[in-house]
Length: 359
Image (cartoon, rainbow, N blue to C red; front, side, top):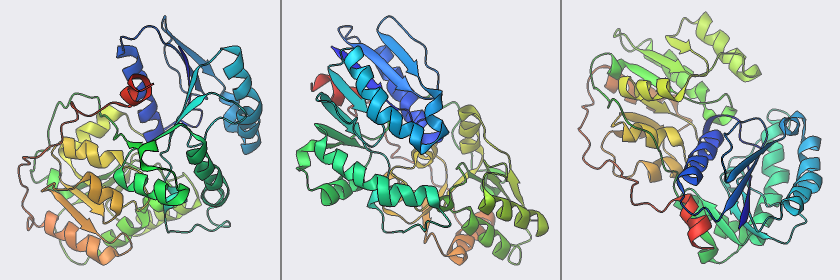
Protein backbone atom coordinates (compact mmCIF):
# COMPACT_ATOMS: atom_id res chain seq x y z
CA UNK A 1 0.00 0.00 0.00
CA UNK A 2 1.22 3.50 -0.85
CA UNK A 3 0.42 6.17 1.72
CA UNK A 4 1.04 9.89 1.24
CA UNK A 5 1.30 12.14 4.31
CA UNK A 6 0.65 15.84 3.71
CA UNK A 7 1.91 18.34 6.29
CA UNK A 8 3.14 21.43 4.46
CA UNK A 9 2.10 23.91 7.21
CA UNK A 10 4.33 22.29 9.85
CA UNK A 11 7.42 24.38 10.54
CA UNK A 12 7.63 25.31 14.22
CA UNK A 13 6.34 24.53 17.73
CA UNK A 14 3.36 22.16 18.15
CA UNK A 15 2.70 21.25 14.51
CA UNK A 16 6.33 20.27 14.00
CA UNK A 17 6.28 18.21 17.20
CA UNK A 18 3.26 16.24 15.99
CA UNK A 19 4.94 15.67 12.60
CA UNK A 20 8.13 14.37 14.23
CA UNK A 21 6.25 12.13 16.64
CA UNK A 22 4.27 10.56 13.78
CA UNK A 23 7.40 10.15 11.66
CA UNK A 24 9.06 8.31 14.58
CA UNK A 25 6.04 6.01 14.82
CA UNK A 26 6.30 5.24 11.10
CA UNK A 27 9.98 4.31 11.45
CA UNK A 28 9.15 1.87 14.27
CA UNK A 29 6.22 0.31 12.42
CA UNK A 30 6.94 -3.26 11.33
CA UNK A 31 4.43 -3.40 8.49
CA UNK A 32 6.92 -3.08 5.63
CA UNK A 33 4.21 -3.62 3.04
CA UNK A 34 3.55 0.12 3.28
CA UNK A 35 5.47 2.73 1.29
CA UNK A 36 5.29 6.15 2.94
CA UNK A 37 5.70 9.49 1.17
CA UNK A 38 5.91 12.60 3.36
CA UNK A 39 5.06 15.87 1.58
CA UNK A 40 6.44 18.86 3.52
CA UNK A 41 7.49 22.48 3.10
CA UNK A 42 10.69 23.35 5.00
CA UNK A 43 11.24 20.59 7.61
CA UNK A 44 13.75 17.87 6.78
CA UNK A 45 13.23 14.19 7.57
CA UNK A 46 15.57 11.32 6.80
CA UNK A 47 14.52 8.96 4.02
CA UNK A 48 14.60 5.19 4.52
CA UNK A 49 13.90 2.13 2.41
CA UNK A 50 10.15 2.58 2.79
CA UNK A 51 9.97 6.33 3.56
CA UNK A 52 10.33 9.01 0.88
CA UNK A 53 10.32 12.75 1.62
CA UNK A 54 9.31 15.46 -0.86
CA UNK A 55 9.83 19.11 0.10
CA UNK A 56 8.28 22.28 -1.34
CA UNK A 57 9.75 25.27 0.58
CA UNK A 58 8.14 27.76 -1.83
CA UNK A 59 4.70 26.94 -0.43
CA UNK A 60 5.43 29.31 2.46
CA UNK A 61 5.81 32.36 0.20
CA UNK A 62 2.11 33.31 0.11
CA UNK A 63 -1.48 32.12 0.25
CA UNK A 64 -1.46 31.98 -3.54
CA UNK A 65 1.47 29.55 -3.53
CA UNK A 66 -0.33 27.35 -1.00
CA UNK A 67 -3.57 27.34 -3.05
CA UNK A 68 -1.64 26.49 -6.23
CA UNK A 69 0.00 23.59 -4.43
CA UNK A 70 -3.25 22.26 -2.92
CA UNK A 71 -5.28 22.38 -6.14
CA UNK A 72 -2.66 21.65 -8.80
CA UNK A 73 0.51 20.04 -7.42
CA UNK A 74 -0.94 17.81 -4.67
CA UNK A 75 -3.42 15.93 -6.92
CA UNK A 76 -0.64 15.35 -9.47
CA UNK A 77 1.64 13.93 -6.76
CA UNK A 78 -1.06 11.50 -5.68
CA UNK A 79 -1.52 10.30 -9.25
CA UNK A 80 2.21 10.13 -10.00
CA UNK A 81 3.06 8.02 -6.95
CA UNK A 82 -0.03 5.79 -7.30
CA UNK A 83 -1.21 6.59 -3.79
CA UNK A 84 -3.83 4.37 -2.14
CA UNK A 85 -4.43 6.37 1.04
CA UNK A 86 -3.96 10.03 2.00
CA UNK A 87 -3.25 11.37 5.48
CA UNK A 88 -3.66 15.12 5.80
CA UNK A 89 -2.30 16.88 8.88
CA UNK A 90 -3.37 20.17 7.30
CA UNK A 91 -6.92 20.47 8.73
CA UNK A 92 -8.30 20.19 5.18
CA UNK A 93 -8.51 17.31 2.71
CA UNK A 94 -6.64 17.26 -0.60
CA UNK A 95 -9.12 18.41 -3.28
CA UNK A 96 -9.91 16.84 -6.68
CA UNK A 97 -8.93 13.27 -5.74
CA UNK A 98 -10.99 10.14 -5.15
CA UNK A 99 -8.79 8.31 -2.66
CA UNK A 100 -9.40 7.38 0.95
CA UNK A 101 -8.50 10.37 3.12
CA UNK A 102 -7.80 10.52 6.85
CA UNK A 103 -7.97 14.07 8.19
CA UNK A 104 -6.11 15.28 11.28
CA UNK A 105 -7.85 18.40 12.64
CA UNK A 106 -5.78 20.41 15.11
CA UNK A 107 -6.81 24.01 14.40
CA UNK A 108 -9.31 25.22 16.98
CA UNK A 109 -10.08 28.62 15.40
CA UNK A 110 -13.28 27.49 13.61
CA UNK A 111 -14.69 26.16 16.90
CA UNK A 112 -14.14 29.00 19.39
CA UNK A 113 -16.35 31.91 20.46
CA UNK A 114 -13.59 34.54 20.43
CA UNK A 115 -13.71 36.64 17.25
CA UNK A 116 -10.65 38.23 15.62
CA UNK A 117 -10.74 41.46 13.65
CA UNK A 118 -9.42 41.75 10.10
CA UNK A 119 -7.49 44.95 10.85
CA UNK A 120 -5.64 43.75 13.93
CA UNK A 121 -5.27 40.02 13.19
CA UNK A 122 -5.62 39.56 9.44
CA UNK A 123 -4.03 36.10 9.37
CA UNK A 124 -6.23 34.73 12.16
CA UNK A 125 -9.34 36.44 10.75
CA UNK A 126 -8.79 34.68 7.41
CA UNK A 127 -8.43 31.35 9.18
CA UNK A 128 -11.53 31.93 11.26
CA UNK A 129 -13.80 33.31 8.54
CA UNK A 130 -12.54 31.81 5.28
CA UNK A 131 -10.44 28.71 5.83
CA UNK A 132 -12.74 27.51 8.63
CA UNK A 133 -15.47 26.85 6.06
CA UNK A 134 -13.08 24.57 4.19
CA UNK A 135 -12.16 22.80 7.43
CA UNK A 136 -15.81 22.05 8.23
CA UNK A 137 -16.38 20.91 4.64
CA UNK A 138 -13.31 18.68 4.84
CA UNK A 139 -14.59 17.02 8.03
CA UNK A 140 -17.71 16.07 6.08
CA UNK A 141 -15.74 14.79 3.08
CA UNK A 142 -12.99 12.84 4.87
CA UNK A 143 -13.38 9.10 5.39
CA UNK A 144 -12.07 9.41 8.94
CA UNK A 145 -11.25 12.37 11.21
CA UNK A 146 -8.78 12.42 14.09
CA UNK A 147 -8.66 15.10 16.80
CA UNK A 148 -6.54 15.51 19.93
CA UNK A 149 -9.16 16.18 22.61
CA UNK A 150 -12.72 15.33 23.63
CA UNK A 151 -13.77 18.97 23.46
CA UNK A 152 -12.57 19.17 19.84
CA UNK A 153 -14.56 16.07 18.92
CA UNK A 154 -17.68 17.59 20.42
CA UNK A 155 -17.08 20.90 18.60
CA UNK A 156 -16.43 19.15 15.27
CA UNK A 157 -19.61 17.10 15.63
CA UNK A 158 -21.69 20.19 16.38
CA UNK A 159 -20.27 22.17 13.44
CA UNK A 160 -20.23 19.41 10.83
CA UNK A 161 -23.14 17.18 11.78
CA UNK A 162 -21.20 13.98 10.97
CA UNK A 163 -21.74 10.73 12.89
CA UNK A 164 -19.82 10.26 16.14
CA UNK A 165 -18.00 7.14 14.97
CA UNK A 166 -16.37 9.11 12.16
CA UNK A 167 -14.25 11.14 14.61
CA UNK A 168 -11.64 9.56 16.90
CA UNK A 169 -9.84 11.23 19.80
CA UNK A 170 -6.10 10.48 19.81
CA UNK A 171 -4.11 12.59 22.30
CA UNK A 172 -0.49 13.31 21.30
CA UNK A 173 2.03 10.73 22.51
CA UNK A 174 4.97 12.44 24.16
CA UNK A 175 7.97 10.31 23.23
CA UNK A 176 10.85 11.53 25.35
CA UNK A 177 12.83 10.40 28.35
CA UNK A 178 12.27 12.54 31.44
CA UNK A 179 15.72 13.08 32.92
CA UNK A 180 14.72 15.43 35.74
CA UNK A 181 11.44 15.96 37.58
CA UNK A 182 10.29 19.26 39.08
CA UNK A 183 12.13 20.25 42.26
CA UNK A 184 10.01 22.61 44.43
CA UNK A 185 12.85 24.75 45.81
CA UNK A 186 13.02 28.52 46.36
CA UNK A 187 14.41 29.17 42.89
CA UNK A 188 11.94 27.03 40.94
CA UNK A 189 8.94 28.33 42.91
CA UNK A 190 9.85 31.91 42.03
CA UNK A 191 10.61 31.35 38.34
CA UNK A 192 7.69 31.31 35.90
CA UNK A 193 8.25 29.87 32.43
CA UNK A 194 6.00 30.45 29.41
CA UNK A 195 7.01 28.65 26.17
CA UNK A 196 4.83 30.14 23.42
CA UNK A 197 4.81 32.04 20.12
CA UNK A 198 3.80 35.68 19.74
CA UNK A 199 0.17 35.29 18.64
CA UNK A 200 -2.26 37.58 20.46
CA UNK A 201 -4.23 34.67 21.94
CA UNK A 202 -1.09 33.38 23.65
CA UNK A 203 -1.91 36.21 26.03
CA UNK A 204 1.50 37.48 27.14
CA UNK A 205 -0.21 40.76 27.94
CA UNK A 206 -2.06 39.37 30.98
CA UNK A 207 1.28 38.17 32.40
CA UNK A 208 2.78 41.64 32.07
CA UNK A 209 -0.27 43.24 33.70
CA UNK A 210 -0.09 40.73 36.55
CA UNK A 211 3.63 41.40 36.92
CA UNK A 212 2.96 45.13 37.29
CA UNK A 213 0.46 44.38 40.07
CA UNK A 214 3.00 42.15 41.84
CA UNK A 215 5.51 45.02 42.05
CA UNK A 216 3.43 46.62 44.78
CA UNK A 217 2.59 43.45 46.69
CA UNK A 218 5.85 41.66 47.50
CA UNK A 219 9.55 42.32 47.98
CA UNK A 220 10.45 38.69 47.31
CA UNK A 221 12.54 37.91 44.24
CA UNK A 222 10.85 36.36 41.21
CA UNK A 223 11.18 36.32 37.43
CA UNK A 224 9.34 35.35 34.25
CA UNK A 225 10.81 33.70 31.15
CA UNK A 226 9.28 34.09 27.67
CA UNK A 227 10.48 32.16 24.61
CA UNK A 228 10.19 35.36 22.55
CA UNK A 229 12.86 37.71 21.25
CA UNK A 230 10.63 40.79 21.54
CA UNK A 231 10.43 41.43 17.79
CA UNK A 232 7.84 38.85 16.64
CA UNK A 233 5.16 41.42 15.75
CA UNK A 234 4.03 44.94 16.62
CA UNK A 235 2.09 43.83 19.68
CA UNK A 236 5.06 41.92 21.10
CA UNK A 237 7.36 44.88 20.37
CA UNK A 238 5.09 47.14 22.43
CA UNK A 239 4.97 44.66 25.28
CA UNK A 240 8.77 44.29 25.18
CA UNK A 241 9.20 48.06 25.40
CA UNK A 242 6.77 48.17 28.33
CA UNK A 243 8.78 45.51 30.16
CA UNK A 244 11.99 47.52 29.66
CA UNK A 245 10.46 50.88 30.57
CA UNK A 246 8.87 49.56 33.75
CA UNK A 247 11.86 47.37 34.61
CA UNK A 248 9.77 44.26 35.02
CA UNK A 249 11.57 40.98 35.84
CA UNK A 250 10.70 39.35 32.51
CA UNK A 251 13.36 37.74 30.29
CA UNK A 252 12.87 37.39 26.53
CA UNK A 253 15.19 34.47 25.73
CA UNK A 254 13.98 33.67 22.21
CA UNK A 255 13.36 30.22 20.76
CA UNK A 256 15.08 27.35 22.58
CA UNK A 257 15.54 23.61 22.03
CA UNK A 258 13.13 21.01 23.41
CA UNK A 259 15.91 19.84 25.73
CA UNK A 260 16.12 23.31 27.29
CA UNK A 261 12.35 23.48 27.52
CA UNK A 262 12.29 20.19 29.44
CA UNK A 263 15.03 21.42 31.77
CA UNK A 264 12.96 24.51 32.54
CA UNK A 265 9.90 22.36 33.29
CA UNK A 266 11.98 20.84 36.09
CA UNK A 267 13.29 24.17 37.38
CA UNK A 268 10.37 26.58 37.10
CA UNK A 269 6.59 26.87 37.34
CA UNK A 270 4.85 26.54 33.98
CA UNK A 271 2.71 29.57 33.19
CA UNK A 272 0.17 29.02 30.42
CA UNK A 273 -2.29 31.94 29.96
CA UNK A 274 -3.20 31.09 26.35
CA UNK A 275 -6.96 31.00 25.81
CA UNK A 276 -7.09 29.37 22.36
CA UNK A 277 -5.56 25.91 21.99
CA UNK A 278 -6.58 22.57 20.57
CA UNK A 279 -4.45 20.69 23.08
CA UNK A 280 -1.68 22.75 24.66
CA UNK A 281 1.34 20.42 24.64
CA UNK A 282 3.30 22.30 27.37
CA UNK A 283 0.52 21.48 29.83
CA UNK A 284 0.96 17.75 29.34
CA UNK A 285 4.75 17.98 29.13
CA UNK A 286 4.96 19.91 32.41
CA UNK A 287 2.53 17.50 34.05
CA UNK A 288 4.70 14.57 32.99
CA UNK A 289 7.62 16.39 34.62
CA UNK A 290 5.51 16.61 37.83
CA UNK A 291 5.69 20.39 37.62
CA UNK A 292 3.57 23.12 39.13
CA UNK A 293 1.27 24.72 36.55
CA UNK A 294 -0.72 27.96 36.42
CA UNK A 295 -3.08 27.98 33.43
CA UNK A 296 -6.01 29.84 31.93
CA UNK A 297 -9.35 28.40 32.98
CA UNK A 298 -10.39 27.00 29.60
CA UNK A 299 -11.96 23.79 28.30
CA UNK A 300 -8.69 22.43 26.84
CA UNK A 301 -6.61 23.13 29.97
CA UNK A 302 -9.19 21.58 32.29
CA UNK A 303 -9.31 18.44 30.14
CA UNK A 304 -5.51 17.99 30.04
CA UNK A 305 -4.98 18.83 33.72
CA UNK A 306 -8.04 17.05 35.08
CA UNK A 307 -7.28 15.66 38.54
CA UNK A 308 -3.75 17.07 38.70
CA UNK A 309 -2.93 18.30 42.23
CA UNK A 310 -0.47 21.01 41.21
CA UNK A 311 -2.60 22.81 38.61
CA UNK A 312 -4.11 26.22 39.36
CA UNK A 313 -6.48 28.12 37.09
CA UNK A 314 -7.41 31.75 36.53
CA UNK A 315 -9.78 33.61 34.16
CA UNK A 316 -7.56 34.39 31.16
CA UNK A 317 -8.54 38.08 31.02
CA UNK A 318 -8.28 38.92 34.75
CA UNK A 319 -4.68 39.86 35.68
CA UNK A 320 -5.70 40.43 39.33
CA UNK A 321 -6.61 36.75 39.66
CA UNK A 322 -3.34 35.68 38.04
CA UNK A 323 -1.28 37.97 40.26
CA UNK A 324 -3.06 36.53 43.30
CA UNK A 325 -2.01 32.98 42.44
CA UNK A 326 1.52 34.09 41.56
CA UNK A 327 1.84 35.90 44.88
CA UNK A 328 0.78 32.81 46.84
CA UNK A 329 3.36 30.69 45.01
CA UNK A 330 6.14 33.27 45.51
CA UNK A 331 5.34 33.70 49.22
CA UNK A 332 5.10 29.96 49.81
CA UNK A 333 1.38 30.04 50.60
CA UNK A 334 0.71 27.28 48.07
CA UNK A 335 2.31 23.96 48.92
CA UNK A 336 3.59 21.58 46.27
CA UNK A 337 2.07 18.11 46.38
CA UNK A 338 3.95 15.08 45.14
CA UNK A 339 1.74 13.87 42.23
CA UNK A 340 0.35 10.36 42.37
CA UNK A 341 -1.62 10.34 39.13
CA UNK A 342 0.85 11.13 36.38
CA UNK A 343 -0.70 10.05 33.06
CA UNK A 344 0.83 7.03 31.38
CA UNK A 345 0.38 6.95 27.61
CA UNK A 346 1.95 3.53 27.02
CA UNK A 347 -1.45 1.92 26.57
CA UNK A 348 -2.98 4.68 24.49
CA UNK A 349 -3.82 3.85 20.91
CA UNK A 350 -1.30 5.54 18.66
CA UNK A 351 -2.14 7.72 15.69
CA UNK A 352 -0.53 5.12 13.46
CA UNK A 353 -2.88 2.46 14.83
CA UNK A 354 -5.91 4.45 13.71
CA UNK A 355 -4.40 4.97 10.27
CA UNK A 356 -2.93 1.53 9.56
CA UNK A 357 -4.55 -1.14 11.76
CA UNK A 358 -8.04 0.04 10.90
CA UNK A 359 -7.60 0.29 7.18
